[in-house]
Image (cartoon, rainbow, N blue to C red):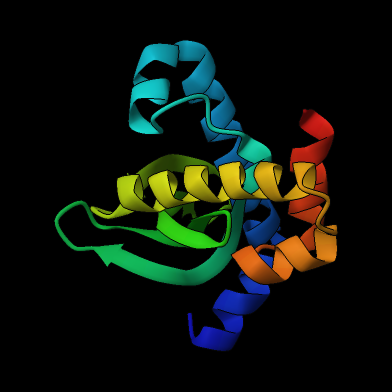
Length: 153
C-alpha cells in the first residue's frame, strides 16, 4: 500500500474521526474506571473540554515476527494549546480497532501546572473586568475555550 492508498484507506474507514473520538472516549473511560489514577496523573479533575487533539500521522506497519499488518493513527494531545502527549489507535487492515494507548510527555505535568495557572489568570482577569478578547491575547488561548471556562463558574 503506497501513501495515496493509505490516505484513501483512512478516509474509507474514517480513521481520523474514529481516532479523535477514541481519544475522548479513552479519557472518559479512564476517569470512570480509575478515577484516583486519572486525578493523580492530571493533578486534579482535568476538564476534557480543554483538551484538543491534532492529527500527527497515519502509518502502515508490517510486523515480521507475527506476520501481520496494522495501521497506527497518532494524535498530538494538547491541553489549553500545549502539547502534553500522544494518543495512538491501532487498526487492522479491515478497519477494526485492535488497540489504543495514551503516552504523556515527560513535561506534561509542567504543561498541566502552567495550564492551571492560566486558568487562575483567566478567572482573575475576568473578575477584574477585562474582555474575553483581551484575556485570550494575554494568555494565548482561544476565545471559545475562555468562554467555556467562564461559563463553568
